[in-house]
Amino acid sequence: MVHHRIVTGVMLACAALAAQAQEVTDTTPPQNAALQRQEIARGEPARWTQGDVTTADRARTLRKEIGAALAEAKQGCQKGPASERGACMQEAQRIYQQDMAKVPQLVAAK
Image (cartoon, rainbow, N blue to C red; front, top):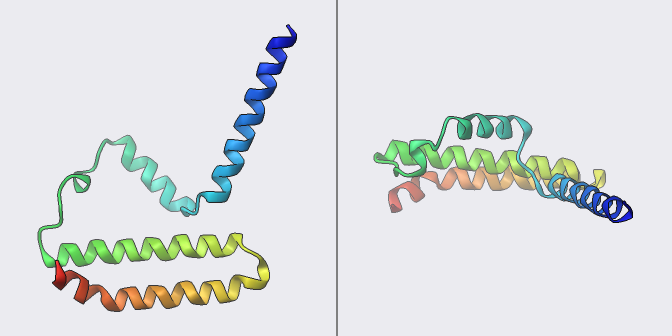
């Protein structure tokens, strides 16, 4: 009986630590996470196995990825110290603008 309680206690502690660790490291915005769960529930999207064919497709995908990176960076900034949030958000926006400006060159290079 005591052994069962110890095992149960250890399992609960591990579950709590795992949940806490996920909260700290997961920077995916909630709306994106919900969309990801919906997509995965429908099965593997074709885009996971098929590359972009046209230049416009590649540019659209790259812009989407850059936007997602900005959303994750902003989420990370919100979790940081309040005194650093403004600078963090400005840096995230600066990187976003730099990356978006490079889209034509990156698409042309492929």
